[in-house]
Image (tube, rainbow, N blue to C red; front, side):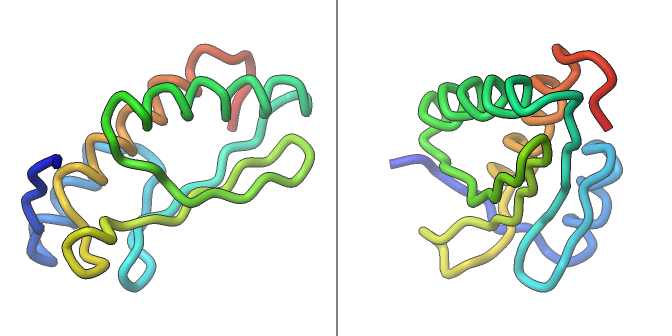
Length: 103
């Protein structure tokens, strides 16, 4: 099982500065990515799935055509934001940069 460090409110706010575009919304961190095409969006989801499986941390997301919206926290520790959430958010940003004109 992965070890997670639960972050305080101040730690979450500081950590999110290093995860461009991610915001806190209640118990979750959230971001929406808009891709040029549906194909790009689905290819992104496949890459995210691989990364999430390697991290053993599986985000909740919603897909609508070319838009992927994430909203997640760490369920294993009582629905808190952890260092693992921040690492995953940073990884999701890095993966998105592989695609042209992602917003």
